[in-house]
Image (cartoon, rainbow, N blue to C red):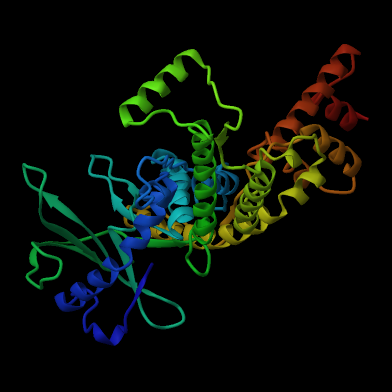
Length: 460
């Protein structure tokens, strides 16, 4: 989550005052507990695992985790970024080639998961250190990096900070490395304590990006995670399921209630009598005596109704459907499936809008870096396309294409096919195939082909 500062507080944007830097780091530290809690829920470390049942010694204390948080994130991320992002433009080949070399698809998936969990994610851009220096990108844990922007409506990046602990030989924290990124360079500091102002400057180096090489991607306007507002419902679901199992265990360990009879005059006699009863499974009672199990009456139907209600609320408010629900079991048409996924699609549209904004900033930074290496890139006409990761009914799509043939351009129709990645190349391949078919048919019937036909027409 970007930190806002007044630009006038920084006389030189290439020399960030240590006092300002320290204040920004302290402000960022306050956000870390929230981020850790969100990560814990994704990893299955839920509140139920720390539950203590007070003085109820001996009673079962099951701690079941229904990890809806991970399910929501994995489905949302897979739906929005499961298919690689496509870039189309007249002069962006240098960028797309670089993206292939650094496997940008994997980076996008990792970034999208951070965005879904934390509500935002950050990328740091750098130049590789090998002989073939190329632009590269790293997804950094938002607990170790932040961006500082100005207080205008444009939120222009002023500088970015990447800091992380340095460890000694015993793996104890020996201080912190602090890297400050500005529009022209990076300054490296070392500090023993983040609360102090004793920053030791190590070096300052220029970089190739011509802008702050850190981009912050948002999940939504509020910068909240996809399951963040459902944590209380997830906790309620875990408590209900845990207590459900507790009740079952207590039912098995029911108390035998005896009326009008005693098992013995002392604890030893009672223990021995109980042992005999358990071995022989026989109990003799007087005429006015009675024996019964003291058990808690369980209403499984009501518990199950409550469980389903909580589960449905989790999915409804997260706008991520339960794909194992009976509503998705039956075969449905494409239109019916879209209605079932309408909530998820609205969520995806919002996520996509902010994700594309970040991708455009990334494109600009890569264009700046490649320009330094004498590679001309024009991103002004680039179109970014994100395709939903859904099972596709190509038979239904082909029927639609056949019905629209002659009414809609071939380029638009071919673009509807899920197995076609490059529409222009596919159109050329189809045209070439048709031309070869015509030539083959002409040859089979002894008809002139190609230039021969043209020459005959000229002679006439």
